[in-house]
Image (cartoon, rainbow, N blue to C red; front, side, top):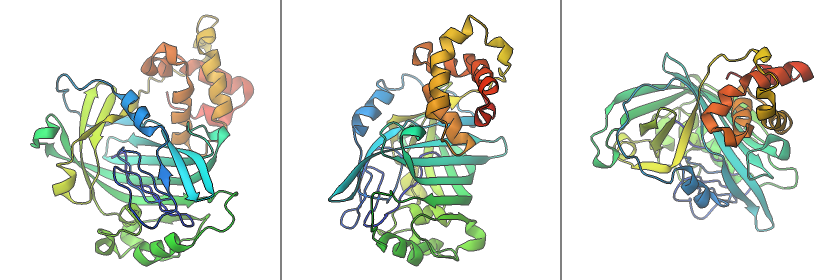
Length: 348
């Protein structure tokens, strides 16, 4: 579901996001204790543990009724330290947004930023961006004792666009990670730094069984070639969902415990987009958040990335779910007044 792979060894970097980092080779390794698997650079989660524990400080008191996911969900922003080599350590962050359709199709956007801990597009460069569609299958109620009340889920990647941008400050990135990608999941063409590729696993890839146990490319090749991910999901309340760590084997993925510190937020769509509703009472409440969002998110490059960015910048004192919908007319008012095209596409 959410959390998926993400990893790339840019240069000497091998990024690993997940509870255990792959030892030995990387230049970049992400171990941020959430649901993200990766192999991208030597990334240490900067303040990630503290961040995770702030996400959900109490345990679930009772089971919530299960219903299929529909609409848009956004992950927490995860701060990272990106260690490209012994002399280049930079701030970074990553975030994942997923839009669930009623037909089982999921549209995903994963963005890793460099130079900023807070997932702010205007304060950073994009290190990697993955936009992909997947099919979700719900496979019944979990009988694992640690996942009471959860639902077994399978995700299959159908098509993805993968983009890598090595930081301009790193002059000579090692080619080893991309050599490993080309060996394990070339899918018809060579991977290179600062590249963008669109891949349909069933049409372009023939290496599915070869990469499942790889230590070189982490989960990225498994993801690219479309191997099925297995995990368990559970609603915490009407607006938040928690998942277990994804695995490529159902015996592991469906028994992995919930990660209660990494919680996804639902972004409700109310259709409350009439700018005339943003009157002299509502505008003072929303003005600062909307103005900040317009400035901070202005360099976002996809609709899902822009939506999560606006969601995160709206006034926190109004309550996360309510500010998104209450301030939506003011987002449209600002977009129309100052001619900000990307803001008019926000669905709130």
